[in-house]
Length: 315
Image 1: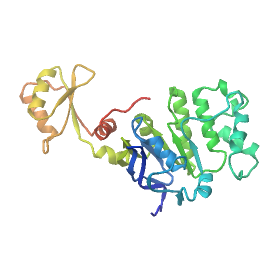
Image 2: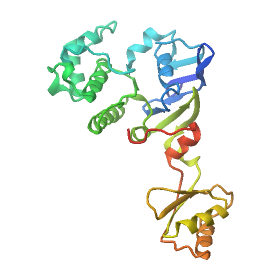
Image 3: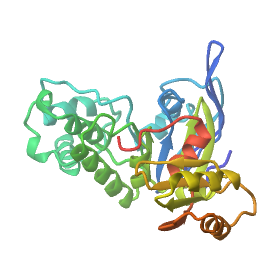
Image 4: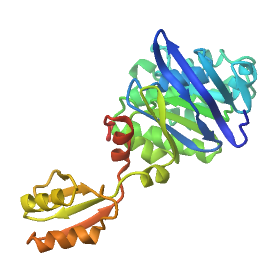
């Protein structure tokens, strides 16, 4: 298995619990330097996959390569170059942020230069916690705790950062803070692998994504590539919703009324049916068309089609 240009590569990665395949033969390809979104509903196999990548769980079958090393064989040489935040930060609540990090850093063998105190202060500043370094972690907001967990992952130079649901449960301000931090890490050359069930967050942070559903990898590529695989739709603004609905149905386009009472949409599912033909049919039947818009499939529509269920959009 070759990983030229890839920070993470898997082939046929599978994890079986009893009779259930929690992860079913997935082939991931995460380019170096990317912010890569690992998207899927809760329970789709994302965290189990991450645990296998990091050697925290053994694979039932398949191959894993991280940063040119084969896992778990090369874990001793690979993992010091990988930072991770999995299933929330593990912190000591009655210690300050600054006092937490040396204890977490002690797990690294051997500890990297420069001196630990210098690296702790630099990591706290990097995640925007320098002003709160002496405050007890129990008094931190959830967003601050998440950033402290990321600071721990940054105590040594990292080529790859793996974050499992880094914005889960955060308020909008905390979400923006973590999102900005992830972007800045990527700009410095770190590959960031972000697992999330929040569609809007993945769209705003990531350049490439993979989609999990029920243990399977159902899509992988750039955002534009995934959008282009969906079905275009028409959006009609009219006071004659009932008449417009009948025309669209007659053309074989199942209509959907959303939100506003004067707007109706339909996917262009009939091969060869042009938008202008739809518009002409509406006008010919006396529908008063105030607006007619054609758009590609939204990413949300594409993911619902891939997984059979919705995603949290706003988070």
